[in-house]
Structure formats: structure tokens, C-alpha cells
Length: 189
Image (cartoon, rainbow, N blue to C red; front, side):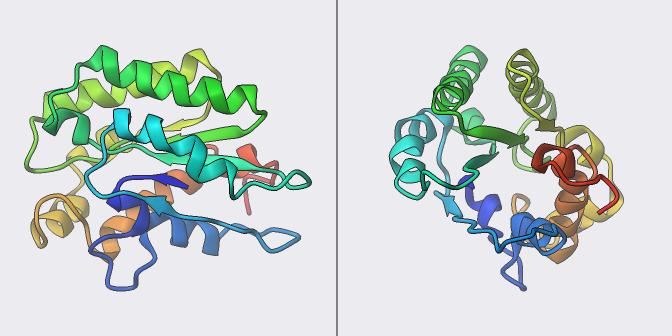
């Protein structure tokens, strides 16, 4: 699991984040090894530069190695173009595919400190890259953009990081948008 600080649950009093909640509801025959490798405030250029070194050293030859990417919105803060953001994600997904590592991508959720239209465009760009590569993509921006509980949870913190309720909403979106199918598990798990 790579991504920004939302991937690790920054601001979550239970310290689970969305990934911890998703894994708690994912039945596996054997215990899963989940390495969470977030970097707060990381843009996609920085993520593309480090993901392979960070992840490949944790993968094992006999395991079903998979990569979950929690995409953030730092590209907007850092002034990266949509073309650069798209290319960075495409490079990660293509390299993972070449190494036979299946990927699952979770898009950036709404934030109060960034332009909503710019964030929607970034999420759409990420979704398009994934669709072209047949990689599952969970859209979080549009479903949460006007969600009362999400907005209240984010507003109660710093406008960027949700609390427990917000992480629960993110986990729900992941669990109900292809997660089980990607793992080869029944959808009603």
C-alpha cells in the first residue's frame, strides 16, 4: 500500500485509516501481509520515483504480490500538470504490470483547501489512466463531494484529513467498488 498520509490514516483516532478498515473486513485463507508505505505530502512524481524500491523489497517470489495505490491531491498543491500526473500514474501501473504485480487504485477524496473542479479533474485523469489499463479505480471525490458526514468530519479537523467517520466512508467505497473481485473473493464477503 503506497500513497499519501490518508493511506495511513492520519487524523484517525483509531489509527486504522481506510486501509486498516478494509483489511479488517477482508477474509483471507492465509494471513495477509500488508505493508503501508505512505509519505505525507508526496506528489506523483515523488511516488513514481520511490514505489518500486519500496515495494519490490517487500514482495516475495511465492506470494500473490499486489499493489494498492492511495492517490492524493498533492500534485495540485505542487503545480503539476494533469499530463504529468497522468504520466506518473501510468508509469507506475505499467512497471507494476511488467513485474506481474496487480494494482488497485483509490482516488483522492474531497478537500476544503483545494479547488473542487481541479480536484475533480485530477480524479478523472487518474480514473482514465486506470480504465485504459484495466486497473480497478475507486472514485472517492464525486461520492463524497456533497456527503454531509464526510464534510462535517473533514471540517472538524484541518480540512484535509478526516476522522473515524470519514475513514469509514472511504473504506466503504473501496469495499463496494471492486475490492473483493480484485482479490478473487465473493463480492458479498
